Image (cartoon, rainbow, N blue to C red; front, top):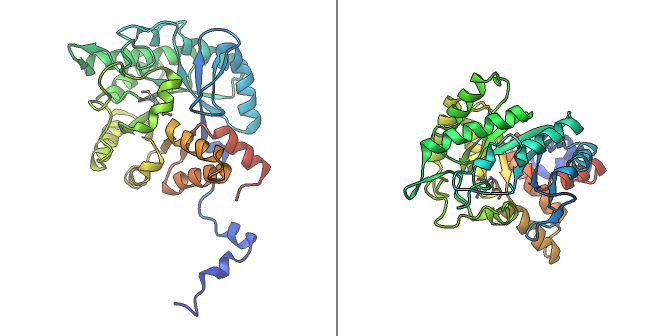
Length: 328
Ligand code: PBG
């Protein structure tokens, strides 16, 4: 049937029709809010390039957790800034490290909040790379042992799920093995399966103080030009025991989200990263776009592409909008 018999506008003529035929929905259940944890007390330090995002000390976590839960955001992803950095990133897996303390605090104060920990070394190494350096290279096999120790220490502190973001080969299997050996076989792994060497991470690197001091991350993160390689990376992580596959960044990689959704039967997560957040905030501040509407359109596009879970600095703001019922 074609025009004039068929008129697609018939089903767009009022809000009830539009709601009835809506194909994709956003819910706070799908949102994960990233948190940056700082040493010290009473720290609430706004990240200049990420308006609305604060880096907080452990004592502020109860307040933050309460706010998230009251908005219906039930999951957080933790990043830590340690007191001291060294060449091997050893602060990542010490028992009383920043993340380990943060996890314990959250689990004590807000047990129902799902605590996911980012597992990587870049915040903990003095050179800012995601692994330890042996010779002139980020050494894969030595790094995955440290990552597994780190994941184990997070699980021991009480984390509900670990999320390795380093892009070393074989790290999912290594982490799974160590968790299982230590009776943490119920802790899932959300793998940053497809993580591109992206310039959209700029504001995060300011926030987490993890800009590489030399070189770049191209020897371990993926080339933005590649999509078949994304399928290979995801296949490996599935075989190694990943429970959730993540794509990062999100908006410039909607095709990758869609491919992972079509090819695999695991849940797919999309990380709407710092630069993607900052661009919307900056344009909105200038009055060039309606920030709230662009936020919503962006997040729904990730769902439409196939993301089951969305990690976003907008989580609280989007949850507020959903709660007010003023979303489109
Ligand atoms: C650590 C890590 C990064 C991000 C998440 N985990 C930075 C990087 O790889 O350089 C970026 C998140 C963001 O930009 O919001 N490896």
